[in-house]
Image (tube, rainbow, N blue to C red):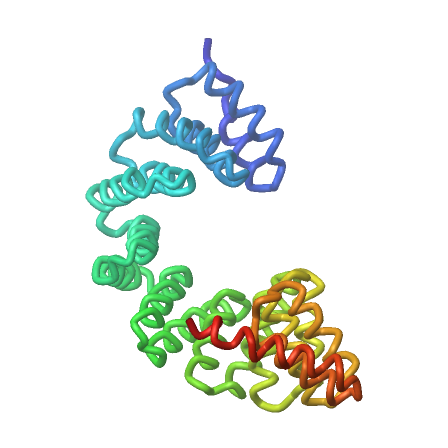
Length: 311
């Protein structure tokens, strides 16, 4: 039985236009008729990969590789699926095989670089990422991770340069904006960090850690009212953040909003009752709000816990 002409192309167009379920249905029917069509198996694998069904994706990509074991694209996709499953050895093997068959496979070099970076094999990671960028200087994922590598090595200016290169290609690349903001904060350049973190927060408004990083930078430049707003946004998504409640309390204390500071520090104490710093801050806020006796109690607890926290 021969498949109708254009069946695969029609399914591919459906996939590209976002009609994923219908594309998958047609592809599943198509491979029953044409089981040697590697592109169809590969596209089925891509669909499962995008749904984070990594085990199923591995099976489908392996079918494509069995048909064409010299395809860098199929091997790279299989490596990505193995990596999604947590099998880094199989993933690295696939990426390396992809590069063997296509020295200019930017995706394989980039993903291998990221994998080696995660493993702490920094020299290998840098070699892979730099090789990817020689062929494709505007690949933002490679730029981002090369920046991450430099940041891990403590080369903050080099890291920032890579994030800026990524942003030159994609000004709305939230991860690069966030990492550039964090690097500037780590350098003590909080005023430079703020605009990058603001933009990242606008692009990823439901990510609590971005709002926390922004709040910390705002507090460092003395914008305590802005910090309060950012801490509150972070806590609306991650209510059990000890650092969030402590930061909110400190910002409110700087604004002499003692009732709000007390409430924040009480939440921090509830989350970490063994924190000497939380009890100390709560005690001081209580005393500043006129609740002297209760404040003294928390300061006494802080003094008792302090040696334990230093141990």
